Length: 397
Image (cartoon, rainbow, N blue to C red; front, side, top):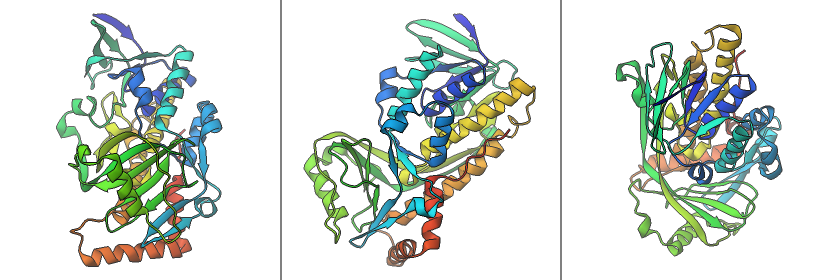
């Protein structure tokens, strides 16, 4: 087994792990990234695509936004539909000029991988048997195999950026964690379609048949979602049925409908809210989906992950440059304040927009009343706008 030493070992080459590695590099702190998937898988996996205003600012300040600024699609509003009418929420007008940017997570991952390799950073892909050890000691380690060769990385710290199903959170003793979780009785059937977006802004549609969402990933690719059952069988959803259901749910008085085209990809995504406290144990720090999951209605998952690692990078700079643990000790406290605010907003959006055949008539009618209030009240719309573009990201110093 070969041995390597680094300052920070990072598990996971998603947005959180790659961004953390880059931010540490800018501070002169050495890191190594270990990823179980292939580089191609990481760069092609289609996931989130809505970036908050403060997330774009963070990426720009870190020198990671060159292509994002060229190709990202700036949005100054969103649209919410119910009872056959679509209403626009002018989020930039209501949130002091702040906006969102649509730029696919996989595109951002491509940019980050290219930058880490250009900066001669070390990223191990296709790793198997990944394990973490000695988390409560001064020199934790990561062991893995790649291409038949065993490697052990000894580090000062380990950052668990390996997602909800990763090994890092599972390595923490159960008695040291408290879990808060809610599973929703519905899921999203998502598709990518080769069709130019027919709206310049996202369209959220509440409908008696179930929720639908119109989004996009590029000027040529549309992203669409349908509320479905968590155990939905994709084989029961041929393309014709998907388009028929989308037309039914998006039906509105203005006659707007998404443009149709060949469906490139289908998937069913379960929906849950999840938080683990604390987000640290010994020399292991969790970030992103390893520590929390939000339902996607609020478009917050990737943004929350990048906010975590911005705080963690600042805390590690403090450790190495000031020889102080004052920010590392507060990492969970600082991050969890934002995490719970985002959980609150994401759960509210989810429960506002989704319904079930079993929903009591009172609750169904109350949903419509709340949607009416949201689209008619400047105060209510301003609250949505403030949260949608992203609450301020305060990085400790």
